[in-house]
Image 1 (cartoon, each protein chain N blue to C red):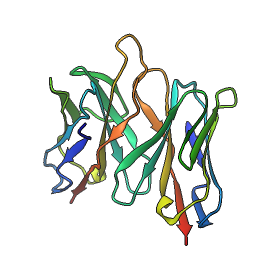
Image 2: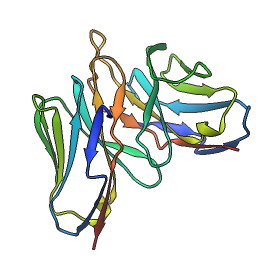
Image 3: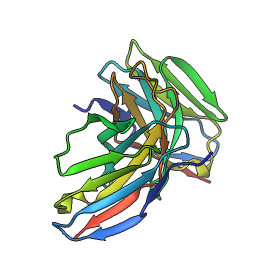
Image 4: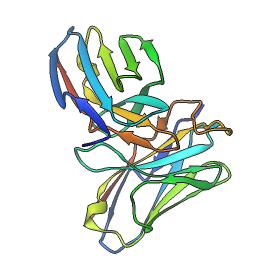
Length: 108
Length: 118
């Protein structure tokens, strides 16, 4: 079993839909990162959080430390949101452990 | 503020050769991490450098080595290339709090170097 599990693996939505991507992890962490990767390979950091909730534009990330679970929500989805979304956890120390990613496709 | 830049963007090497990949960190960041991402998979941690010293290593053999320079730029060296080394190599810079394991800034990733070993 991977230390970081994401669901779903693939997600197709219509423009305007509300989207949720889930991340569960099995280790104690100091921070959790949500990342966005476009087809060219470049990765953009969306959120780094260790508790509660963060919001940036149409994106919202939540984390429940007790349940070892985080969610990334996208409101009013748009085709430009199509990308791979990756959850990564930072345990004590330096390394990040990544989930396999969720491929999101938003159709117009 | 400059972002993280990696070079080259693409590289083709033959099995058994050696390769050096380069990363220029975000200005003000003292920590750089390297990751290997095989096609269709999440990135795997190779190692991290903090203030020019290795500060954590993933499950990669010694033929993967690195350097961090005083200006916080970094190199990843891979010797005796194998076919399975074909992947996207990503570096990420951040700023680490000196007194503990935590970052005080989000990670900034480069666009990666696509390495193909034939």
